[in-house]
Amino acid sequence: MTRSSDQELLRSIYRRLDRKAVLQDHPGLTEKKLVEFFRRADALLSQPRAPDKSAVVAGREAAPEARRPSGAGDSAGHRKLILHTDGGSRGNPGPGGYGIVLMDESGRVIAERGKFIGRTTCNEAEYAGLIAGLEEARTHGASEILIRSDSQLLVRQIQGEYKVKSRRLMPLFLRAREMLQEFAAWRAEHVPREQNSRADALANEAMDDGPR
Image 1 (cartoon, rainbow, N blue to C red):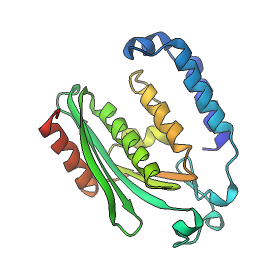
Image 2: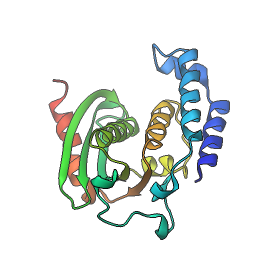
Image 3: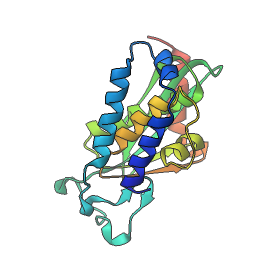
Image 4: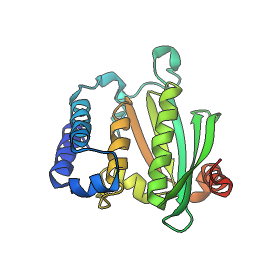
């Protein structure tokens, strides 16, 4: 998906969005704040991207010559990190939590944590984990991110392959897409649950512990 099509997608979402329902679902959110959110997202999408940093754009790999060589490293201002993320709830909706594991390309764990997030749905918890993981990746200086999740819905939605039909998920989807545009490159992979076991365990531990 190109950057121009990202903008078209964003504007199409705005035109078709049930804004009244979104405001009802999110107390404290105003019409003005919602409009400003879309304006910021649109402005971010319109910013030019430096071509020499575009290894992956909106979930698709670029041509090999556009990639940085392996080991280009932090000294060049480039750091690729791998994010394993998982979320769930018991009851759907019910008590929910997420787990995230952030690693470098060698597989070394840089950060991991789980968090209880109260009553929520499984898909909302999946998005909460993704957003928290992206925030963690930026904190650790990532310029490129590879997302691994066992939620096919999450992966396909952020790639633009599945439509976001839930009005409760829409603000989370938009926030995640906005954050992804802050990276020079990103890619998302759907992986089997056994390949996401640590993030899954952290999410379950968070749900077991509940609020602290």
